[in-house]
Length: 277
Figure (tube, rainbow, N blue to C red):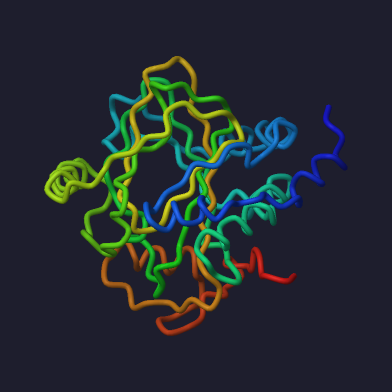
């Protein structure tokens, strides 16, 4: 049992970024940071997240009966809404400040969190851009992707197309076999360098921009790849008119009560960090 006072201290202690790391993120659209969460934090929160994933998971079909998206992972969103015990991890100031500093903004709000558990034998995650789902008027979006367990080389980090975030909205294709084929061809035609960070320790984290093209390998191991993610958006961002059904769904789910032109400040989009506070 870890001392809760020590865990709480770890939750609020700043992570020191270098100028080289910030420059690298802005140039490439992705970055690996070691030890973003300490082992004591992981040991406290991993069982709580596991419990919530088990409780909230409605997927009962075997892998072979699912489509490509369904094979990629079990996806449980907004654990902070459902679990007071998990909420302190999601609202960790340390994480949110990293997000703000990498983007160069003074404050960040929640878009949503999600646990992504890739089962043994789970399939690859096709190439995609996260932000095609998000009807928000900003380039300043970022996702923290943190394994709760050590992940080996063959499972590895996600793979990123470096610099692709600078192109913005490349394709409206949702995560699918079609997106994987079409975007792989696009990446090859544009000669984007591909980067995977390989094996990662529990508590390490990658950060990637909402427009960065990325994918993830399947899971050939006998162990579940347990990952927690948090999506941050720059404070003072406004809502866009949804141009796809996917964006209409996101507006209704993650920005309840808001309409195009409104500031992103619904009860589900709390302020996570503001400089000087």
